[in-house]
Length: 326
Image 1 (spheres, rainbow, N blue to C red):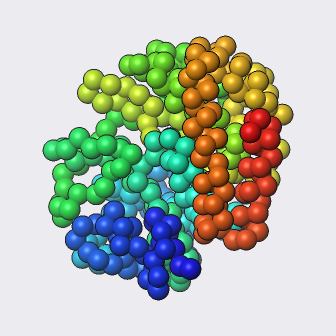
Image 2: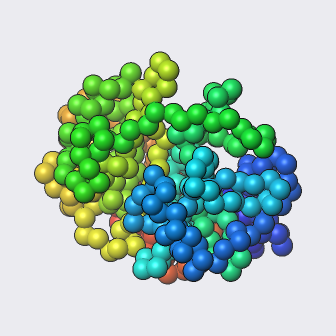
């Protein structure tokens, strides 16, 4: 059964579901293949690299969705989406990230609009809508953000700072911190620190369960609205453990360690002792995540990962759930 790479819904003989297409645009009933094969995508990413503010190991492009061609168009400025390409060395990273972002959403974690599209060579690209760009005339819910139907929407940049910037660290020193040191930053800069501490705990517990061992400082950000500063929607959520086969379980040390973490480390020490969350709040977060696990397993099963990667994802999830007491 074919499934839509945007919604994962069955789509018959088509490449995309009606729902998936409508999320991208209200002006077209189709999505055309991205007009660059993998080799050309990488060449384009290198060409744009010195002109884009988007950085990192994974090759990326800034893009807009063009209603006339019904496809994403790479741009050097004012992009409203980020496209993440297949990696030369690490396999199935776009499929992995898209699936993991879906799992996060199912567990109640706020994520931007995202999905995957086919290129002309049938390879898959991951797309995510930028949450630091917004129409001047509309305040939209970031977790369900859908592009404007206007051809020339006027955008303004929303103030977003990652925690490396806030801590005065660089891309090269983004691992030189700890999970404990993030807490004072939330207390100092967030409008409602307790609410953001709950969201932070939720993301850390989720990342442990699904093998995301690369949540460094640049993968946490604060977003500043007119009267509210809060954690941004979650991004860069990947089961990196099955990609690089790392022995670490967190990018930033917790209780002085990055591996051999236990439920006590995550809940009693970090959640209750360091974040100061009430036991009832911690239990609510854990219960919501635990309730999502059966649906996670089903979603992984019909995801766009290869059979080998699906099995690796499921095995890691099972192991982490056992350690978490599920």
